[in-house]
Image (cartoon, rainbow, N blue to C red; front, side, top):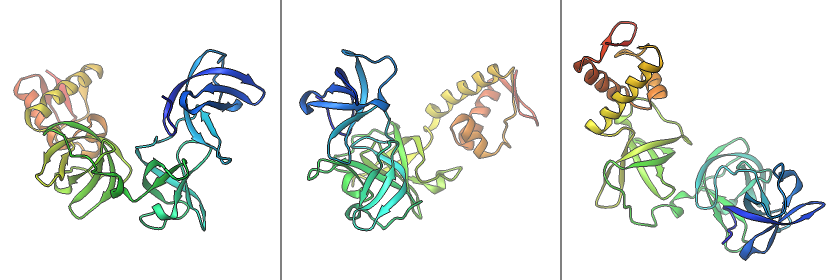
Length: 277
């Protein structure tokens, strides 16, 4: 069943001067304008498209890829404003996404960046955005397990650390005291569930704990050494930012992995870096 605000695989059923028509199944025929037709596409072919309503309220398809579909959160730039309607966000399509005034947690202006939720307005049947994030998070009981890897979107900074949106469904917290480098609003990263507390609050961490964290990292370091001729310009004194960018982990975890490899006599640590033994 085809859905507005989602990517759909639809079959081409008609050619016309203005574009192609697709079988929108429950939504009826949907036009794909000429500028979005993939090269070589013809009658009977199936293509991957996104469905939305144009400025004339018609259902149309596009092969453009939005930064978020209905039901997802994204970090989007405000590109224009209307005094009565609200502001418009660049979400990767030629038609910008409306952030209505009533859906703004705080007033925003052109040039601002916001974490927004994309949803289908039931009254207008149009896709719009909201920055009132609490309305759309935590509606289901968290079913995460300790140590589970999850997708995170950094959404806000607090005195304790950073609030992150977990799997487009729940709030979680990364504690500042456990971070080796600062994070940025809008950043998408992998993280791990540290604990789900009795009241449903979720604590997060960026690295796996204990042996589960160190063993895969030692394998990653060994592979990097082999790929680089047996030498890497990383050691105990390397900058946390460089370690995070290259290995995706904290300096603490990296040092633990180096220690494990050194004790196993698999590497040598020098002033210039590390080498295969």
